[in-house]
Amino acid sequence: MYRVLVDEETGLYNFQYLMERLQQEINYVSRFRQELVFCLVEVAGLDKLSQKEAKDRRCKVAEFLTDFFRDYDVVARVDDTKFGVIVRSISYKNATKRAEVLMEEFKKRFPEFSDMVYIALVKASEEVLANNVFDRAIKALRAKLHRIGWG
Picture (cartoon, rainbow, N blue to C red):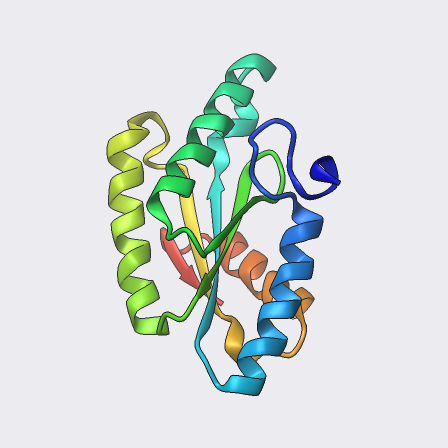
């Protein structure tokens, strides 16, 4: 059961669990009218590194994100360059402020990736399906007009 939920390389939750949990959270917040934000972080340069070095960096980024977010936020590995975070009980305005702090802290911790990190925020409490939230986050990342994109 442990391997089904957790990415072996980083120790974070895996993409499948992230999407299942995002749907559960959307259902919950729609019933109780609470705030929910989905954060997608892309470190574009990770795919340019050697396999060993990329694995090491992914693990360090995973540790950094786990330390940065609250214990009850869900941090997961999406793929080789992306990480997703379900951020509960936070307004979109406060999530935007936290994303700006995240960007600054990321640049300090990983200066070699400072020009290659992008963050997308989606107000997930406005959606009904987790896939729609994820798609909006991906579109915001693909635009790459700003370091922090809003979906």
